[in-house]
Length: 391
Image 1 (spheres, rainbow, N blue to C red):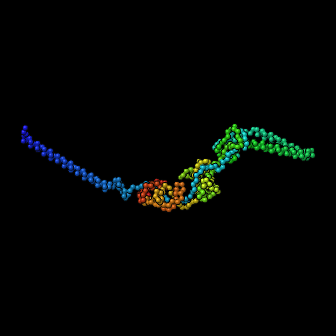
Image 2 (cartoon, rainbow, N blue to C red):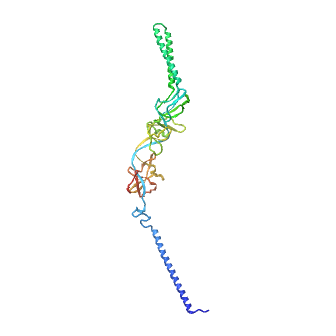
């Protein structure tokens, strides 16, 4: 069937219009894409050039190069007398410890002290049942008195030539035996008392009331805990450094303050063949701390030498991760690395033999994060906070 010419022309016109619209739309999308690509390229270029000032690259007006200040704590180096010590560890001992043994066997009648009680020399600790011994003492006293009276009467009769001198002599001898028997009876009564031979503290009580005790086992142990001593084993090669009279410090743990002082009292003149050490006895001069007790484990620092005008630092302030020990000092707000030479050490302190001078500001906390010429912020100086950002 044939189509009308006007209808055909209308369809061709509509087709050309759709084609033109499609081309225009495609061109707009292309232009849009090109514009978007230019914008991304600008962003990439800016990223390559780096962030603008005031962003992640560093605050406006900050240190050159964008370096941030590293917070540290420091102390001013100063000189002082350095005490060179020799460390030993041991258990404290009471300078005098006595096992109190009854002087005679018997039944325990009374116990007057307990463990932990302080006692004086000669104080009564326990009493044995002494009733029988007291009766024997009274009998002996009566016989001694009677014998003495007989001697007096015999001498009066001998003066009148009524008895011979031999008879008087026999009575005198009998009187002496009676007197000795009385003394022995009195001794038994005294020995029924268990007395403390020294002043100190009761550390052990071994007897019970009503128990039978003998002369082979201790009834109490008394220790003079006010006078302590520490016996330190010193290596043979270090023994020449020790002399009688040198001062010593008693410590509970590394880095802690001394709890007492002492003095080298004696040095054993022989070397222990098994351990290769020399025993040095340090007397603790006084009971300076109530925590000190016999048997307690302590560290003993014997002062062998005193070096004047030496600089010391905490061990943690010295970096030893390289071939040469080094520290950082603060100079004009920046970190300056110094190579140092170490000397003697004392506890957690170490001597800086070379590399520092008195007055240098040495970083003691935060040095692990530093590098030469790095800017620093001083937060604490000599244990006190620093106001603001002053260096």
